[in-house]
Image (cartoon, rainbow, N blue to C red; front, side):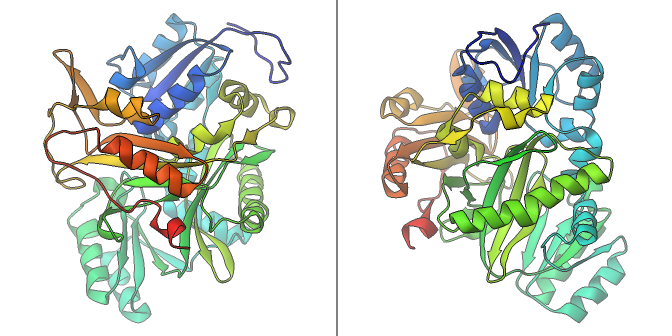
Length: 433
């Protein structure tokens, strides 16, 4: 294996990289890693048609991934999705001497269990919503009747970004209990639930690089979770995003770092769960300051698609520094620009939708200067077809949010496939400020 050092100065290293995952986030990571002069070759597993050569190994098959990494002499593995992290992929790779960007399983629990994350925050005084944890539906219903609405009901485990119900009425909250605990809408993720007070404010996402000691926040972003314009309709994995988020002023970002990120990383170390990789902070900016909505143990999707294009730095170098504990040695800067991502989704998403429709116009969209990241696509008979709910992430970059919005929508108009839909109001909060 190649020996890498974070303070590489001007030495050239040829790094073989393996990116785990197949969505828009992973395509964005692949694209940014390809920019590095240190990159020799990038393998993707399983990947998608936007990322070159794909493999058919499952992201949950730790043994097969380890074999593949050894066979290809991989120097750096970058884990995109949460499930492999929670399944202990990082533990197995690191034990075999393969440098891996992402937290180990016991640290990834900060995303894998909302109850764990809430209890950690309570113990260490990290600002978040008041909450209770329940394993019995009847006591959960009694709590809802006592607290009233609006109120937030969350499945404890992983539910692909959809296990959160913001209930406007008591009846909606009770229906959520039925769906999660009685009807197993989210499978095992719903055997335990967290019920939280409803927080007033504006949401934002703040991702950070960390080596377990040093924390470097990325540029802030704001996601659009609801399916339809005006923040209406069901929750999705994210219909679009933009960066930077004006609600995250320099002062608010500093507060989030000092009051949330630093205490969280310190708490995880104290609990014997040292955390390295990317920590995603879902925030509510309230009248009292920033409070935690959720943690994720990895890059967000579609936040990554707007954050990484604004990174003015070598992502390979940064990721290796996070794994080596030398993040303080690495310069990280951000471009004074804005990025807007519009997600093109399959009709019916986030409920049932069809796959296999041919996609037209990707090259035309790219010719406008936009970035097009593949998310739910596949290649059939030489054609790119739809293969998921969120199909493409189309990113425009401009001097400010307004010009980035214009560029992303100009590119979106070049792309078509049967039953495609997208929100027409991405970045509306920034534009209306």
